[in-house]
Length: 107
Image (tube, rainbow, N blue to C red):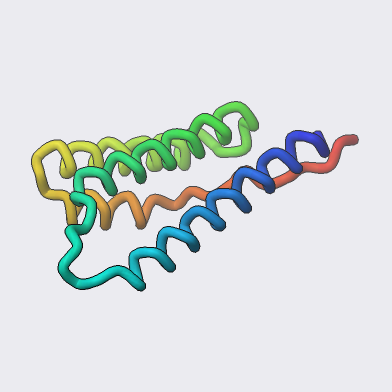
């Protein structure tokens, strides 16, 4: 369990580092450069949320009602992005109430 927790913490740290570097690079680029399309942001959010859902499913730490609500929001965000309503989809992704799996002590 400690190994799994370390892996999760490492993944989170790596993601934070990548995001920080990306923010640093994009903040120093010229205004003339083209930003990545919002569709790419939708795909990135979808991948991230889907991975968190899988981790929670494996840990079985969410009740059925909460899990169903998260899945409903995921599909709403996917539908908005598929309909080319990227800003709406991104807003829904950002509001999905899910985070990393909480670590549990072994008994």
